[in-house]
Amino acid sequence: MVWSGDKCRVILADEPGFDGWCRVIWSDHVRELSDLAGPDRDHFMAVVAAVERTLIALLEPVKMNIAALGTAAPHLHFHVIPRFETDANFPAPVWTERRHTTSRLDRIALAERLRSAFADAVI
Image 1 (tube, rainbow, N blue to C red):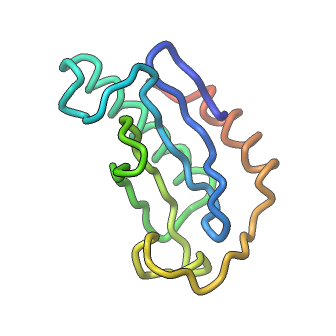
Image 2 (spheres, rainbow, N blue to C red; image 1 turned 30 degrees about the vertical axis):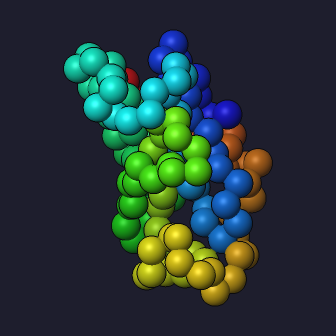
Image 3 (cartoon, rainbow, N blue to C red; image 1 turned 90 degrees about the vertical axis):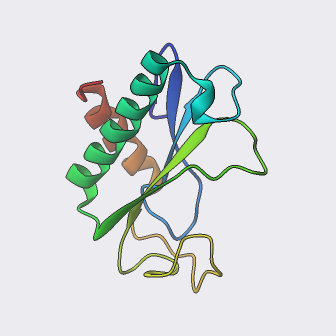
């Protein structure tokens, strides 16, 4: 867990080969973004944007990917994924077959850096 608020939380995902992959997860059970009322939807997207800004500032990726794919887990969550030329299948989409699964960053140290940086993020 990187951050938790009243309505959603941010986790650093365990995705080997993809440094910094985070998920923003809505706390109450809803299936789709459109299930949220306007203010809740705005809050959720503000958290997604804050995670994106924080990852860009900390890791300087080549590109960011944001996805709302969750057919296997029908609960509202967004993936916020920094992309690097060294990631598991750059420049292909993250859900294609991985060429390797080596991460370049220490996951525990990265989680601490994200917690610290996100604590200062404006949401």
